[in-house]
Length: 416
Ligand code: EPU
Image (cartoon, rainbow, N blue to C red; front, side):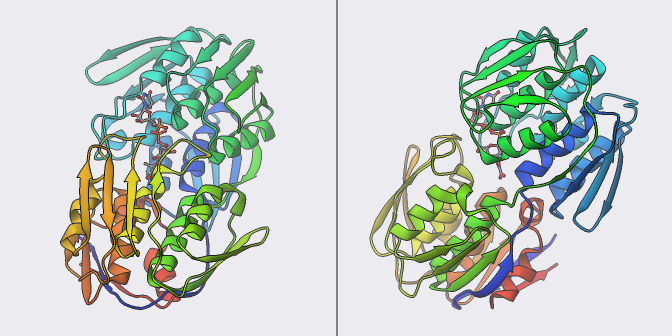
C-alpha cells in the first residue's frame, strides 16, 4: 500500500494551480442522469472519487468519456437505476444518484452507505425530502428501494443543514411536477455551482446559495457545458500548509470569495494575504499565532478545513481551541498528531492545542481525506521524516498532491 514520505522543515514557496472542486464535480456528474442529452464538464479534477462516480454511473448505462479535465456524460438511456454496495461503501457521495434516478426513471435502488470514519452520517433527510415529494422508500437487505410515479413539488424544511441532502433534493425537484421549496438548505458554494449547471440544462431554480431554494419542475432537461468551480478546500489546505511552514505561495485558478472564513483565520494567525479575482497570495515569515476555530455550515468555518487548522495550531504560538460541530467523530488526526509530538487535549468536541516549537517526524496513519491533509501539513513542519500510511485517502480528494507540493519546494515522495 502506498505511503507518503515527507522530509519536513522547509517553507513552501512558489505557485500552484488549484483543481476543480471534488465536492462540486460529484453532484454535477449525477445531474447527467437527469437528461438524455450530453453533459460536458470541464475543470473536472483527476481524483479517485471522480473515477468512482464515473464507474457508478457507467454501471447504470451512462457513457462516460474523459480527456484531460473534460468529462462528457451521456445518459441517453438508463439501463439499470441501481447503485451497488461495492461502490457506495467506498464513497458516500454515491447517494447523490438517488434523487436524479427517481426523478428520471421513477425508481431507484441505492445501497445504504453504512458507517464512516468521521461519524454516523445518516441519509434520513434525503429520504424525508423525497418522501415529501411523493416517493415511497423502503429499506430491504441494506438497499433503499425507491419508487414514485412523477415526483410532486413540496415544501421541505430540513432538520439540519445537509450539503448532499440539499443537492439530492434540488436535482429531484428539477424534474418534479410543480414547485418545491427547500428551507434550511445548505448554502455551500458547491450547491450554487450545481444549481448553475442545472440552470444551464434548463432547470428553473432560484435562491441557491441562500437557505431557501425554490425549484419549479420542468418536464425534461437538456444537455449543457459547465466548468466546475475551483476547489476551496484544496486551496485552503495549501494556504494552511504555507502558513504552518512560514512560506510564501501563490495559488492560481481559485475562487477567493468562497474562502472568507478560512482567509480571516489565516490573517488572524499572522499571515499576509493578497487576493485577486482568481488568485490568492499568502506570506508568513514567523511562527503562526494560535487561532481558535469552530466548524459550522457555510459561510462558517468549514469542517473540511478543521484537521488542517489543528495541524497549524500544533506549531503556533499559544493555545487554540478547535471545536467540531458538524461530525461527531472527526478528531482521529489528533491522536496521530500527538505521535509527532503535538500537545493536544480532547474534551468532548473540542481539541485544546498548545503549540510546540517543533514537531518530530514519525510514522502516522491517515484515517480520512481531510485528516490525511492535516498529517501532511504536520509532516511538512516536523523535523526529519514523516511517513503517512494509507494515502489512498489523499488520492480521493487532492489532485497531484506530491507534484504540487514538490513544485512548492517540499521534499515529498510516494513509497510502496
Ligand atoms: N446528516 C443527518 N442526516 C442526513 C444528512 C446529514 O443527520 O440525512 C448530518 C450528518 O451526519 C452530519 C451533518 O448532518 O452530522 C452534515 O452532513 P452533510 O450531509 O452536510 O454532509 P455530506 O453532504 O455527507 C458534504 C461533503 C463533506 C463535508 C460535509 C460538510 C460532499 C460530497 N461531501 O458531506 O466533504 O464534510 O458536506 O460540509 O459534498 C470531504 O470532502 O472530505 C467531505 C467529507
